[in-house]
Amino acid sequence: MFDHENRQEMLYWAAKMGIPVSAHGDGMNELQLNEVRIINLLPEMLVMVRSVTAGKTFSYSRKSIDIIRRGLLISFQNISGHSFNKSSRGTKLLQEQPHVRITPLHLKSEILFPKGITIRQITILIDLDYLKNFLGKSQHQFEYLFNDEKTLLIEEFMSPEMATVFSEVVNTSSATILPEAYYKLRALELLYFLFKNLLNRQEVSHQNLRNDEIEAVYRVRNKIASSLDKPFTQNELVKISGVNRLKLRKLFTQVFGKGIYEYHQFLRMQEAARLLKDEHLSVSETGYQLGFSNLSYFGRLFEKHFGAKPKKWSSNL
Image 1: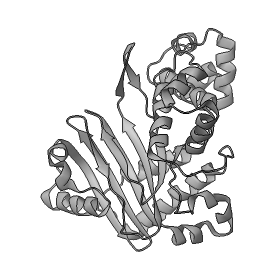
Image 2: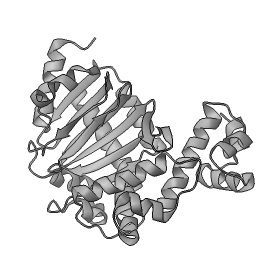
Image 3: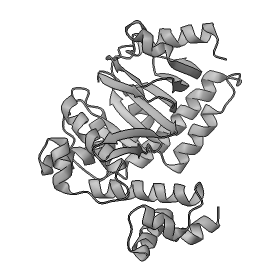
Image 4: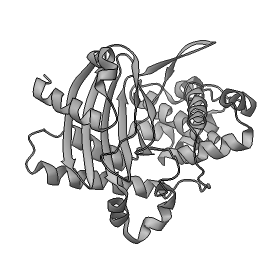
């Protein structure tokens, strides 16, 4: 049971993090706070571990954050369940892979809580100078993150290493000894694996992003995520985004670190692994459900992502 004292602490820090609860009273009453832990490591870091479930779908607008003068908000997120996306062809499941988002503290954003979905997050607010010192001589490889005159948004899939640390932290007892030392150590571990992943992103020149451009890219991402079983056309995605083809490719790669086609194939392979593992489908059933008419190609693509053919991979579970 989430007690009154912990709830008040959460509301206090929520306001500090650009979420004025008074403006969202009705929605917040529908938010079941399964667990919230705030670890105050300021002025270098603030770490929040939370698990929430919305009784109804609602959203709120996050304002700019000023408890750190120059910094980043890095949110590791895992979602249990499926969001539903309505389209002209009906209602479809919208898959959300465990992921990390990086934004500057000044970025205002709209946060959505879909009904019945449990969201587990580890959010790190970190001072830019402290982060640079952490990265040491490698910091020059991430200069695009340190220009606080630009508005950026980076989204990265969680690697298995990140997912392991994430799971250990969210499942740690709130009564752990030396809590500040523990959470600082694990937060830095997550950051290490994150920046290790960022080194593998496709190179692209990072430009300042407008809010409408961010919204356009996510409309395309949502279309891709809800269309794992059939191909899409470039013209269709350009129409959805409202920007020209070249700009869409650049913006998409800048945010997600992969081209549109590569991103789509990655999601298909993640869903293939889920169908094999959790739904216990056969290899052919999985391939056909994801729109592969050529099962040999499906097998080669799966092996490229997971290091083994789907039949062998599933037999080792």
